[in-house]
Image 1 (spheres, helix red, strand yellow):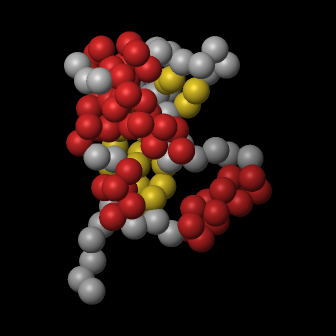
Image 2: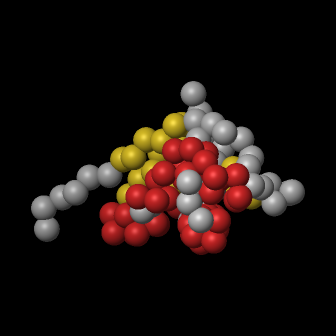
Image 3: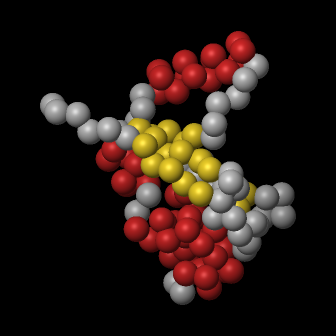
Length: 114
């Protein structure tokens, strides 16, 4: 199963892992990082989670097809797709389709006392 981890971690930690991967030549498991829990929840709204769910393992689809699968307006789905593309959650193919290149999502973050 091709799983991506959504996580909350600092940019410095993310860059340190990237540098270690370059140094060792060993790639880490796929991760999409957010600097704060607030940024994660702002980006991954309930409607966007719904999109991710229907796109997981589906291969490339058009925005119109994604909207049909979630029974939503194409314009609203387009706005959500744009946000997910900007966050690096979705990819765009050369022919303009969108794809979530994973079969599963794992979410990993810890809330600590202030």
